[in-house]
Length: 95
Length: 370
Image (tube, rainbow over all chains, first blue to last red; front, side, top):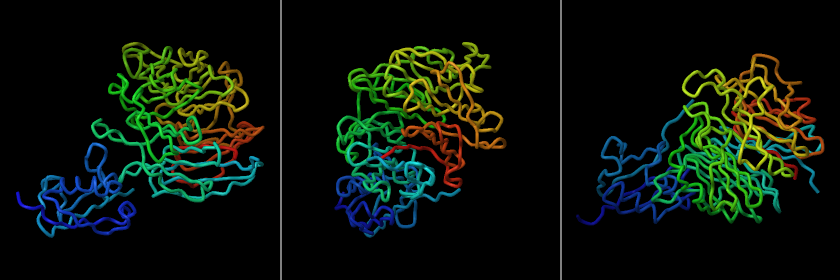
């Protein structure tokens, strides 16, 4: 396996307070799982908002790789390629 | 000098704070604080400079603890919230109780799935209390309709009482190091064995500081007509203990229903206790006419307090932590409803008035005089 591709993580407004106000983060990771593991140590406060204590993606969050929800791909084992944009968004809720 | 009555109101859409001068004629309301998500527990911490705490159950981003150091003009997240160890396998689903511990900054926190956490720094860091969180019963407890929650934490020196739905009452006599199920006489209506060792759906436990051996419990009642295995279990819903919670007996006779959620003790009289009986099926007051019921003899008899409350067509629920009483000479009761009304019962509940009538659904009401 070659060097991990560099990707961009787009951080939604409500979560920017947990990563010093950053709207985007640039990291290197082969998969979404590896990207989340990177966040766990590099942005631990942000990570706690995205994953629970067991490492599971929070139920009411969606993670997209470019335009696709990872739930429609290979989940957090979805592979990443250079230049991918990983977007974290709260699920739509109403009522 | 204490001169203000402060209310914290945990709702479906954040926490509100209301305060008034001692006559309690008019309460000013502030809020909602937090990101508009449910608040199931609040604490008015009167040790030293008063601090207000609120849990914040964010369905998107997880649990937070909010803290106010300016009497509810603003709230900020503490540095962390309780969290299970990574290899535990459980994930925090809600925060159900916040209580002051020993010292000036110790806090205790009961969570869902039922476990206990402790903070030594006013909520900035938390550690799990293994004596109950890893109790041999812990993985056998089952969630009730509200979830598997630890909703009651009561400290009395080295004794610690915990209420768990559905787990029952657990007692520690070594400061919280170890716990034993202590449910002799506490019935369960949803299991073949009417009096199991543990697993009861305890709704709330209360006591008076001056009578620590006397405890009152609102248990999950409403099983008088059960005809299945084990037979009917009338009057298991409202209970009393006189031996620090080792054994319990019914005091439900005279109530229109033994089902309910909150139970509150008068601050100056351990014999005076308040409940709000509900129909077990609808979780609303019998006859759709809300009333708080008071006993002034430790549960020997009960009287109805409803002056000023709606007389008909009222179907709200008052949840387990949504009723409290202040500590003034003539104390006032307060309850919040699932329809967003906050009521005050002056003169110990003799006269009721609606303070606020259009709040979000109310989960939690706490009051203190500061």
